[in-house]
Structures are given as structure tokens and as C-alpha cells.
Image 1 (cartoon, rainbow, N blue to C red):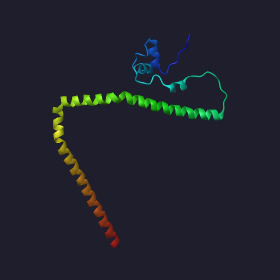
Image 2: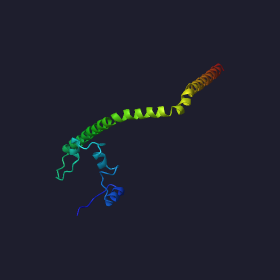
Image 3: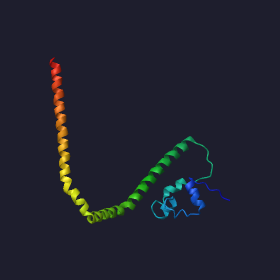
Image 4: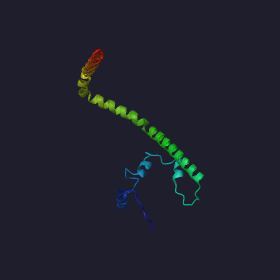
Length: 151
């Protein structure tokens, strides 16, 4: 019989319940079958197990580590491009849905838009007041400093 090793007990429980990983939404298999992640890529070839023992060689090990880092960077770049390409249409759809939502509930937003100028004026006034108080305190500090110099 074949022994199975699981990353966590959640995976083991689902295996015992005979659930198909391609139908369980949080699994890697599901994401790959639905086209949410890269399924076919040449960088996956480097991750395969090799059961052939090799002699240790320092130069070879250094080159191998450098190659692994390079493959990882290539893989991440490809995954990023894949994700950006997938989300390209979703962004336009999101904007369209947001516009429809705004048009549907315009009466809720109207008071907020009407008060926007008033709120901005209050923010500007408070900022001006803070600047004025800073200027006054700075002038007082300078005046005190000059008095101390005279004594």
C-alpha cells in the first residue's frame, strides 16, 4: 500500500472524506483546474524530484543555488504577468459595477457631496489657525531668546 503525507490535518480529513481536491475551492488543484494559477510552465520542470545521488562539489553547489534563485525570480515574474492579465478585465467590470451602485444610491451620496465644500473649508480654516499659532509661538520664542541675549 502507498503511504500519504499531508501538509496539515485539514488536508488529511478531506482526504479521508474522499473529497476531490479539484472541487474544493482552497486547494492548489482547484486553482490550477479553474485557470487561476499557472498550470503549465517550464519553470516547474526544475522543481521535480530527482532520485539520483550526486557527489558534492562546492562549485556545482554554488552554481545550483544561483540557478535556483534565477528560476525563482523568473517564476515570480511570470506569475505576476499571468495574474495581471487575468485581472485586466476584472478592473473594468469593477468600475462598471461601482458606477451602477452610485447611480442606484445617488440620494444617499447627494448630502455628502453638498457638504464637501463646507468640510473642505473647515479643514482649511483649522490648518490656517494651526499655522498662525505656530508662527506666534515661534515669534515669542525668538523674542525671549533676544531678551536673554541682552541680559
